[in-house]
Image 1: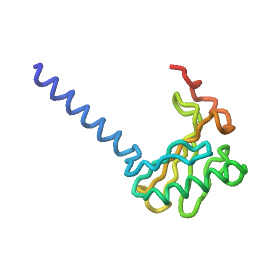
Image 2: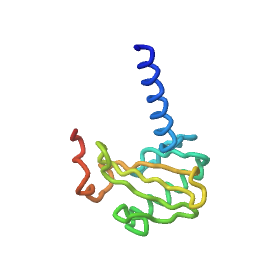
Image 3: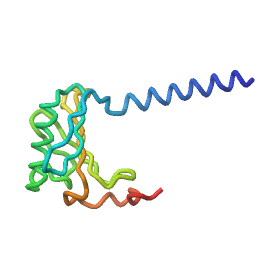
Image 4: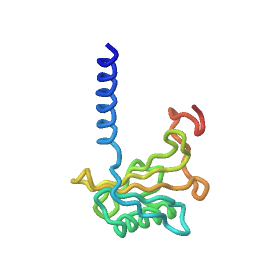
Length: 133
């Protein structure tokens, strides 16, 4: 009976890991940060670092000017990428921006803004307060 339970637990753990990894950003490249800006982490999937850094640079400039990619807007377009900001999700008060190529869901760039260096909108009302729970 004990062997059967451990096999069921192992199978469930494998299924959960496979489901989580398919939805997460499969990082191919960690491209550092943008010096002198609030962007402190750039990661890419099926993207080379120069392109990922260029997308992050263009997004950061637009955010700084409160242009088309202001973090209060639900999405914006940069070159062939559509970018979706998420502010105050989970425990982190930082903003995470995920940019995807429109027709290729696997090509992604993700970068993070430091909340201490840029003014961010308040988190959604249904999100828990940062640091809670």
